[in-house]
Length: 296
Image 1 (cartoon, one colour):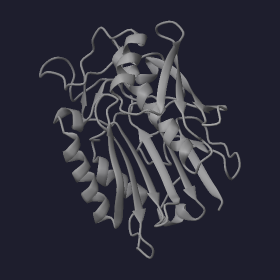
Image 2 (cartoon, rainbow, N blue to C red; image 1 turned 30 degrees about the vertical axis):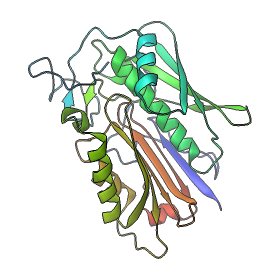
Image 3 (cartoon, rainbow, N blue to C red; image 1 turned 180 degrees about the horizontal axis):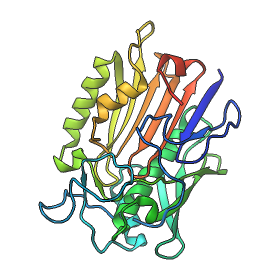
Image 4 (cartoon, rainbow, N blue to C red; image 1 turned 180 degrees about the vertical axis):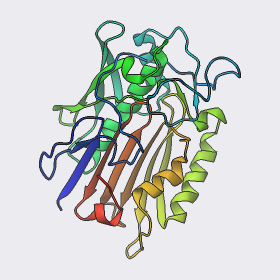
């Protein structure tokens, strides 16, 4: 079965073949705004919501794209190595194995190391999504007075080691997205059980059968979903509709990955977005872009 994959991170669109990636400016995941280029440097946010009156929480003078209702106050920020150690400890994924900062403060580039097989259907979307979650969390922990994430970490690359031991480098990236976002799931201290139950109910209301709902914690909650679409089920919604039904607006989570499989378990569509970096991507099996209303 032929498939297609699309990635968005603020670069210009280029077609690279049926099994390749197509870059655009945050339209494949319908984030509602075009982000800037791939410039960035190192980053800071808190696990807890900012205290009332402790700096900007709902308003900011920056014109950077923002997906949260609140922004954390500026602070001293962590050293990149300290931030990396913290994120790797609390992220909750064994796929991201290490991160390495390259460059001086103000021009940091992150190399993210992962284990997995990027040749599997939709796997490249998942791998780059997890790397973007980790990158965004590190950026917001390093952040001091920067108003945009790409003023903290200038970019990233993702090095994936497959089970055979072969390595492959995937493109990372970051857009002109507000630094220090505090998402609704952080503000109301939503527990994982509540998140799983709410997402489960949303999936079922869209005619999907949940297989797994995983809550990760780069800083605040991020959600990874796998669900099946029963044979003959009518899809009268788009993937953008489903994404908004799960994440809300402003966003409850700092990242969301959705995989929809056939009854036999074959992936039909995999789409992910990381709201701290503005990086998103979508893979779909042949014809499934029409079924799920994928827009580029």
